[in-house]
Amino acid sequence: MKVPGEIRTYCPRCNAHTPHKVSLYKAGKPRTLSWGLRQLERKRSGYGGEPRGRLRRKAKLTKKVVVMLTCKECGRKISRNFGRLSKTEIKR
Image (cartoon, rainbow, N blue to C red; front, top):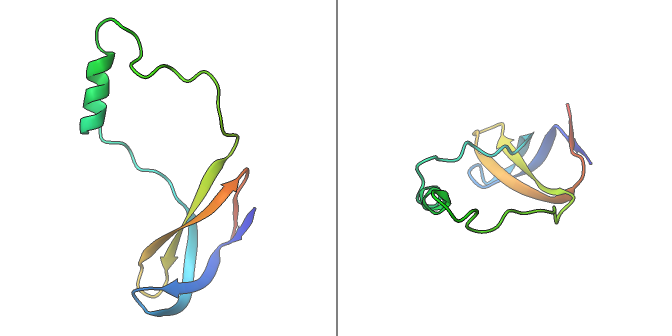
């Protein structure tokens, strides 16, 4: 799906429809010392193999695309879900 590089949509901070810059959402680096990851590493250590079993087959073919909209007036970022898409292209 081709997405325009700029979308005019509602901004809650400006309380008006303003132009927004469009960019794809990219997940940040996970924390290495988070509680869940520490527990998983503890379960993985020693003998006994994988704690939750290793996934052999892929269930989904596509990922859900999340687009970040940045307001050009105030700079507030809003995330918008575009659903399942095989390919996404932002037109500049």
